[in-house]
Length: 345
Image (cartoon, rainbow, N blue to C red):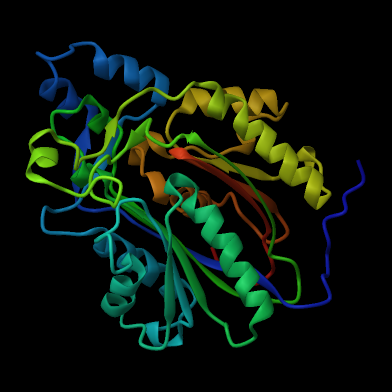
């Protein structure tokens, strides 16, 4: 298939210039969870380790909020580009573990960052939030020449919204990742594709806390204010859904899968990524895994993996990268980006 990915769109695009990430200080390796759940379900950690590849994860201090993870990740991206918070025009935060139901977490981040000129908005599409926010920000930059420096990030602190006795706590790692977007004449973020199915909205959720079920003493006593899996998702949602979404993106944007230099998927199970890459008939070496050292960082895992790939020297100008985020609900989003000469890592 002859590539139709543009080399010059003849107008204003948005390019990823710099990346950043942040991990909080406390590490909880699998040995900690083996001891924690030893008398509850002795083999749980062994089974989850084999299926997910997760070996450790990090947790924030008790008095921190999600915004406290996002701010240092954004600062890292700005520092890479030698910019200050005063240079930022727009902040986009993707998270499903917000500081508050309202106001938005991005407003809190803006204040803590000291980005006094910046506008903000949140994207709440669970683990699909980052590629969704990246596509939205790129579209806004294309139509608004006043947007010169845009921060897009994902942050995750689902551990704080979970029951400490819930076995699913094994997965949750706290962290944040971010990118800095700047205008570009060459194509940067140039395509996105989406799919969703709200029939699965209550499979994995925080049942109480919104208008469907406000928090009450009864809800708290029953733990419905905490995240919980009410019903397992069918494996085929990701096993079949991710390849379908990637092919849709490639078809609509006119590139072949063989042209993609790196695929980055939601980092929840390494076995899922292996199945998806086989379905796409692409070598596993063309993806990047970080769940083994960060845990499942949800809304943050895609930008964290992108930064980690850059730090390991896997990214360079000219490469084509596909980002796929998959969140509960479910929401799934894929974004294609061509790294430009302005990419700093």
